[in-house]
Length: 202
View 1: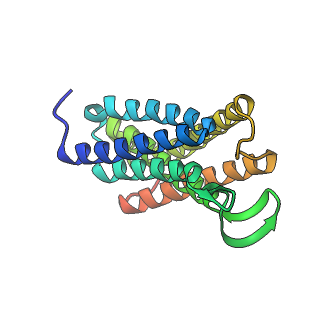
View 2: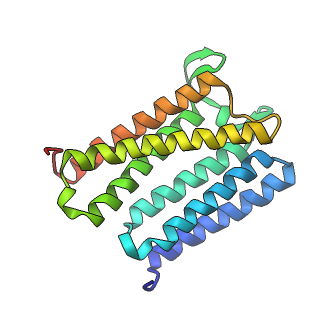
View 3: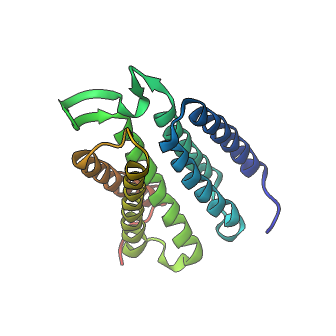
């Protein structure tokens, strides 16, 4: 593995500081649901770190991933009105139990799996440059991000089974999460396509 760049060190330090801080906080308040998420995040951080030189992630993508992690940690760790930040309704579009829009949680899902689609697009086009600008490079990252979003819901389901009194929610919440995951992934791929001045043609 080649030398770590200054930008990579900065992102790594920033990420390490907030992960450590929130991990200590979760243990202090007994939020063992999010300890599971911390473990998952550490695995993902390890995967990105070990592949830095193989795919040369741009600093903007690394910062976007780190910001997603911070938003996620804050969502489960910042107390708010007897619950946590994840439950906060940012814009009162619909307020009917679990069918509540628009919540902090939904924004994080939209953003996070948009970044995931961008990550998958970068890996694909870096590894197979011939695919850049094709429909394949547009569709597969979007569908891949949706699939990883489903994995995230499985992790949430695991947390429900292992930890009592989670803030995960029920069926409607899960369905909304999947909708926002898919929306974020598709919007990201439209944006990536336009910013790279190519059209998904073949």
